Structure formats: structure tokens, C-alpha cells
Amino acid sequence: MIQAVPDNLTSEAMILLLRLGIIVILYLFLLTIVIVIQRELGAESAARRAGAPRGRLIVLDPGTTPRSPGQAIPLEPVTRFGRSAENTVVLDDEFVSSDHAMVLLREGRWWVRDAGSTNGTTVNGQRVNGETPLREGDELQIGRVRLRLSR
Amino acid sequence: MVRARRPLEFGLLLYSIALLAAGWLALQLVRGAEWPPGDYGVIILFGALMLGANLFLSVRLGGADQALLPIVATLTALGLVLVERLEPSLATRQLLWVALGVGVLVLTALTLPRIEVLARYRYTLLIGGLVVMTATMAFGVDPNGSGARLWLGYNGFYFQPSEIMKVVVVIFFASYLAEKRALIAHSPLRVGRLALPPLAYLAPLVMMWLLSMAMLLWQRDLGAALLFYLVFLGMLYASTGRAYVGVGLIFLVVGAIVAYGLFDHVQLRTRIWLNPWPYAAGDAYQIVQALSAYAAGGVVGSGLGYGYPDYIPAVFTDFVLAALGEELGLLGTLAAVALYLALVHRAFRIALRASSDFGMLLATGLGVTLGLQAIVILAGTLRIIPITGITLPFISYGGSSILANYLMVGLLLRVSAESQGVARG
Image 1 (spheres, rainbow over the protein chains, first blue to last red):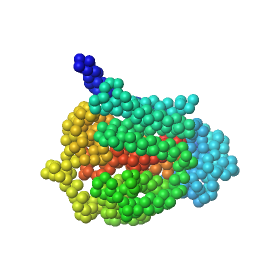
Image 2: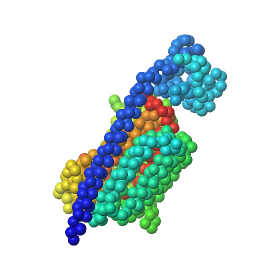
Image 3: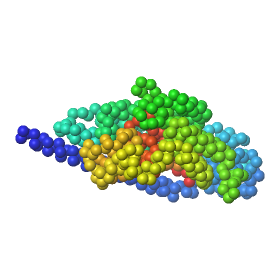
Image 4: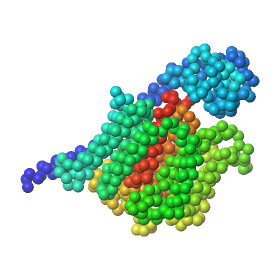
């Protein structure tokens, strides 16, 4: 009988501790998530600041677009090319599809992806199927517009 | 080497396992077991399940979002504790559904060759979904007396097709809207000063509206009808970035007025929403009990096992948050709300970093679906909006809902794995 009292006490104390534990665990978890998100946001804005002027395309042949040879088009981490107004870079050439191609920055390298265009995209004369890496000095052709990647 | 590939997920998952352990042990002690209690089976199984998923994802999907699964696991742990508290006979079954759900998640995340495969089969998926929905309208049963015949099944094993249908609808519209994105620009259709969406958007808008109304008419499923329609509206906004949502909302208001005029149960729910007190012993019994439960809980709650949430009908499915509010208090409820907020944040972050329009719209649609479900039932049990029967994602008891929600997380992880690492400008 006397033995039962401390047992009961441990049980009561444990219940209280576990009740507290549930709330503490929940909020510690949420705090960790907030810290994770904060770090991600910091890393992303730093990457954006550092990575701003990393590449541009020089117009070699503007096709029937109103651009002039030698003009520089700065690249964003994702740059979409095409004739429709939705694109990052609008190329109003009759051989360019409405959504023609995109240039992506991934792991510090540039890639070209054809977006299902009618007349295709080429890098140094090679037709792009799926994705092709784009190096400095490479010649990119979208419709009749010819561009060269430079820093 | 493998473990190091998703260390954040591994660490965060330990929290959810600790949460389940604390809740589970507390329940056993409250029921009179002596310290130390003997039953650790559920905790070990849950831990093995989640850490196993972490290992599988490490092997093939190293780059996918690492916070998503732990958020879901924490919600699941809360759900398991609450089901064990409210309906112990169903706890093992719930764990079985979670195990199947994690299986579906791992399979979706690992075996799908590319997420675009889903876009290619969108009509097959949609027709399959519609056939099953029609079958439910014709042969559906109501095994738990909820007043709506929403289940297909046989001999104690029931399945709710509208849960899978919501995933199918999101996949279909993500693919459809991604394809039609180029068409947007300017619409020639106008009514007075109001610009109508181009036909490519107007047609599915009307179709979704009709589908939602059909669900109301034949199945009296107010919650699912509302969810389907709002999810489509959210995806339309993400796709066009335009206020066609205005037209959509006008449709919604018209639908609500029509539904109010046609259906008794809609009128009833509106009436008990505006003033439940005269009907507290009858039609409004459930919502009044839920409100008392929240009130009884206060800020810190009565403690797990010390409240009286059993007075609320359907407390372990649709009204589970009221039990959480009573026993874990405002602190617990706010934590649950914050978890849903974090879940939606992860989904939208995945959407912003997706490498294709389809992936972006898919992740947006899935995020909106999960978030809206939580909001609709949460606000319903708090009498902020009229109550509509919908499950609280990952917490409510319910096999089809757990499976469908884990499938959605699997798809989100898949989109995340294919992302390009940099958010869209």
C-alpha cells in the first residue's frame, strides 16, 4: 500500500512531463523549419546577387527582329525565348515559334533546351534534342536569329 | 554515405518520432499503465517506416525537398496519437494506411520516369476517374451513416473515389493549362466592362463548375464540390496570372445561391452556421459540441486523455481538430495550423523552382488542394464558414484520404527532384 504511492507519483510526474514534451517537440520542430526556410532565403538572395551578370548573348544575325547585330542580351537563371509576349526575350522572327527555347543556369553551367519549336534550335549547327550544354563562344541559332554566348 | 545525402530530413524526422512516442506513452499512462509502459510497437513501426522512406529517397532522390516529408510525418504522428486517444480500435488500421501511404509515396517518387509522363496520359486518367466517380454515383454506399453515399467497397473495406479524383483533376488541369499557356494574352470575349477568359479557359471553368454542381446534386458532397472548384480557380490564377478569378468567383456565388435554393441540407448548414444555439440539441449538436471543446481546452488544453471530446460526433475524422483543441489547447491548435502553413510553403517553393510549366502547375495545384482542405475543415469546425464534411489532411482517420494525400506528397517530391535548383525570376 505504501509502496503504491511513489509509483503513482512517478506516473503522474511522467504524464506531466510528456504533456509538456508534446508541445515542446511541436514548437522545436516548427522553429527548426523556420530556421531552414530563413537559411534557404538567405542562400537564394546571395546566389542571385552574386550570379547577376554571369552571361549574355550577343546578337550576330537578328533575322527579321528589330534587334541590331552586336546587341547584348543579358541572361537570367531561366531565360525563355519565343515570339509570344510571355517570354523573357521576345524574338519576333517569322521562323521563331511562340515558345521556342530556353536557356538555363544549372550548377554553374548554361544549358539550352528546345521548347518544342517548329523550326528547331541549333548550337554550332547541331540540332538540340532535349538539352545541350552551352559554352562561352558557342553559336546559338533560334529560328533565323543567331546569337553567341559571352561573359 | 547514403545517409549523408538527406541529413536534414533524417534529423527532422526524429522530431516526429519523438512526438509520437511522447503522445503514445502519455496515453498509456493516463489509462492507468505503470511507468515504464510496455507497448512500443506502434512507435517502432512508425519510426522504421519514416526512416526507411528517408533511406529510399536518399538513394534515388537526393536533391528533392527535405523538409516536406518531416512536416507530413509530424502531422501523421499527431493524427495517430489522436486516433489512439479517440477510437483505439482504429489506431492499428490507421497505422496500416500510413504504411501503405508511405509505400505509395516512395513508389511515386522513385518509379515515375519523368513527371511529364502523367501529362501525356491526362485524358486516360481523367476518363478513368470519371468512370469511377459515375460508378460511385450509381452504386455508392454509405457505410458510416454520414448521409452521403460516397464510398465504393465491399465487406468492410471501403474506398472513397473522390479522394483519388482530386489528384487526377489536379494532374489533368496542370497539363491542360501548361499546354494552353501560350494562348492567354487578350480575350475577345467581353460582357460589359468584364473581360471573359478566352474559350480555352472558359470551357474548363464551366466544366469544373458543372462537375462540382453534379457532385452536389447526386452525392450531396458539399466539401468536395467546393474543394474541386476552388483548386481549379487557384491553378487558373497561377497559370494566367490574371483576374479571371473574378469571373470564377461570380460563378461560385451563382453556384452557392443555386445550391442554397435547391438543397435542404445547404439551407440547414447555413442556418446552423449563422446561429447554432437554438438547434444545439438537434442539427447543430456537432458544431456546438466542437465549440464547447475548443472553449474547454483554453490556451494549454486539458491534457491528452483528460478532455471529453467523445461528445462530438465524427470526432476522429472530420472534427479531429476540435479534440486537438480541447486536449492540447490553443498551443496545439496553432502548432497544427503552422504545420499546414509550412506544408503549403514547401509546395509553393517546389512550384517556383519547377523546371517545366507542368511541374509548376502540378505543385501549385497539390499545394492549394492540401491547404484548402485544411482551411475548409478548420474554419468549419470553428464556425468561421458553414461546416462541410472534409477530412483534415494527414490527421483525420480515413484510408482513402491518407493514401491520396501521401500520393500527392510523392508527386511533390518528384517535381522537386526535377527542379533546376534556382527559383524562377
